[in-house]
Amino acid sequence: MTFTYSEFTTRNIGFVTEQQQQKLNDACVFVCGTGGMGGAAIQSLIRAGVGNLILADLDCFETSNLNRQVFANLRSLDHPKAEATRDQCLEINPEAKIEVFDGAWTDDVATLISKASVVVNGTDDLAATLLLYRTARKLGRPVIDAYASPLPSVYVTRPGRPTPEERLGYPTTKTQWDAVTDTQRSEAFFAEAVFVMLNSSSRHYIDLDLAGEVAAGRRSRMSFAPMVINTGTLMAYEALGLLLDLPSSTDERGWFFNPYKAKVERPLPRPVAAVLEPFVRRKLTGMIGSSDG
Image (cartoon, rainbow, N blue to C red; front, side, top):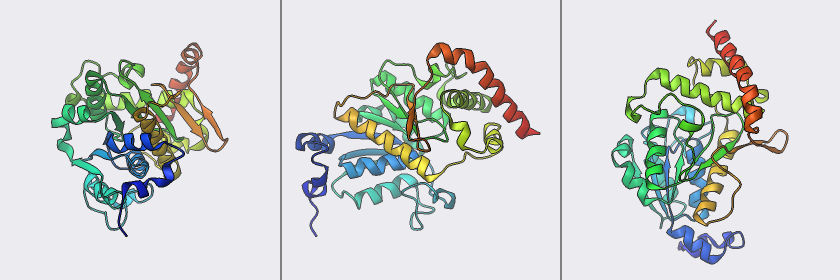
């Protein structure tokens, strides 16, 4: 069978116009981190017909990735994630132009972000995240991200808006991205966990004892395919909306999707959050203390 882009995307028409589909074909998205959420976002972007992708990841696929990462399979195990993801994307759209980078992407970050209209943060590394956001701000590019949350989530930081580092009070504002300490990583993760617990019902859908071990750095983050893939899909929706100049009610504070109750959970009003935050901090501190014991 002969591949043609028009036949490949024919069923998209109706959700998007032919002119919008061509715009997607011409568009470029930079996805940093091609594993869980990043991989799910990439799958939706390539199948939606985005014609240009820049992919970066420093890891290889491993067995523990098979439970949630859409490009992880028995053939891709032990292969660099970015390369394996590119190869599978080209089996979907062989006309796509895809650049791949390993850990050396940091050396060319300004060039990579300047080529793209949208940046998707699929990495869970604080240093890489700081570099992405700081560079994107300088270049006027929006960044799509999600919280480390048991519920699917998404947020969009547009040019000029507060970054997670600023919003959540990370202790890194005067630190170079490549000089972040383990203590700063822990404090930043704690700040994000406080936001998630305060502004969503996530605590009802996870083992809190194990969550305390994660927050204490004694256990790897838990991940579950429906949560991860749904999150990546939400990120892709926001990326497509930005590329097509569509309206969106998602901002830098974002929202959570509760599939158990079929509803969207938005962050609390700031005055309410300010009153409740000390209680949440104490609760989370107690969880960490219990896990240490």
